[in-house]
Image (cartoon, rainbow, N blue to C red):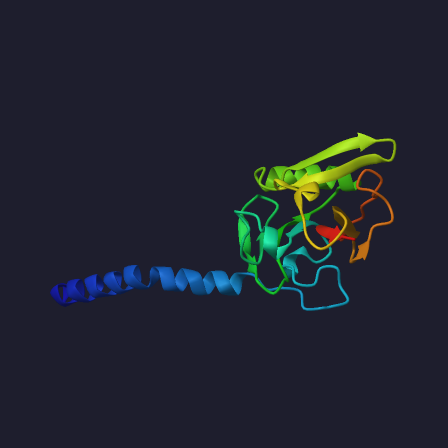
Length: 183
C-alpha cells in the first residue's frame, strides 16, 4: 500500500507546485474588495479602509509615476501593496487603513514614509503655510499643456479643501487626495 502512495504523492506535489502561482493570483484577486459607493470618499478603496484615514496621490495619465504606472496601487499601513484598482482615471497610489492622525500634514508625511519614499513631498513654507509643489518627483511647475499653470490640488473627503495641508484637521475616516489641477 505504501508503494502506491508514493507515486500518487509525488504527482500531487508536482501538481501543487505547478498550480501554486495560479492559486496565489486567484487568492490575491479575491483578497481585496473595493468600496462601491459613489457617495463615499472611500469609493474604489479597499473595504477594510472604510472608516479609516487614507492618503492618495493621483498622477495624470500623461505624467505617470514609474512605480505606479498602471491604475492606483493600494498600500496598507505596513507598507505592503494590497492590490491595484485600475478603475481610476489615471495612475497613482493610496496609503490607507491609518488611524489617529489629527493633522493633514502629519498624515501626509507619515504616508510618504509608509510608501517607502516613492511619494516623497517637497514643499515651501510661506506666510500661508506649506505649499506643496512636488509629489513623487513630479513638480507641478514642470507640467505644460494648453493651460496657464498647473498645481497640486488637495481634496478632503471628495471636495476641494478650503484650507491648506498645514491647516487641515483630520478625523477618523477622512480621505485626502492630491491631484494635478490646471487653469
